Image 1 (cartoon, helix red, strand yellow):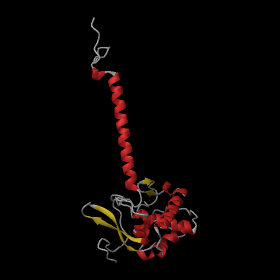
Image 2 (image 1 turned 90 degrees about the vertical axis):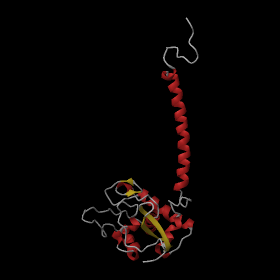
Image 3 (image 1 turned 135 degrees about the vertical axis):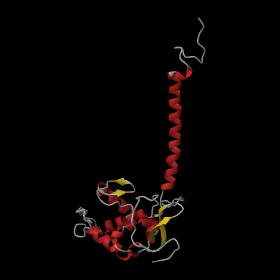
Image 4 (image 1 turned 135 degrees about the horizontal axis):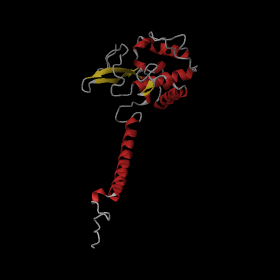
Length: 216
């Protein structure tokens, strides 16, 4: 009886049906996908860094500028538009100072577990308003009153509740003045991130057109 060739399975099955063949395929596919994942992870990391060349995530010092939200005809969606200087609380900060303030706000939001009720950049819950573009929320009335109203609300959200008929009230997180400033800085910076039109259907606070550099 003739011996099976190297290309034949001893069991008599075709080569493409052997366990050894599919085992090797699984190894090669897994290794290949792992390499692709590493490349995509590296690319994503470079894109989402604050101040990256992609422009999707602005530098932290963007809180020194007026931030608008306008419809882009080419992309068929709303996109952030960075306007002229409009420092947060009237104080222009360096990049390092702005980063420290925004980081302080982000850590405060995480420490108070705000995502247990709110949504930030697509993550979190939907019990309370989405905070991704909270800086541009029309509920603040107008740009001149926004910082004051946000400060008063964060200092005492019970007394300054804005329930819009839902009767849902935010508990008092008992923030310090520095934490309040940090949270507002974080919300302003986050509103400048290009989120590809998310959240959809968002209504914008009254504003002038920023794409031409004009003020309202």
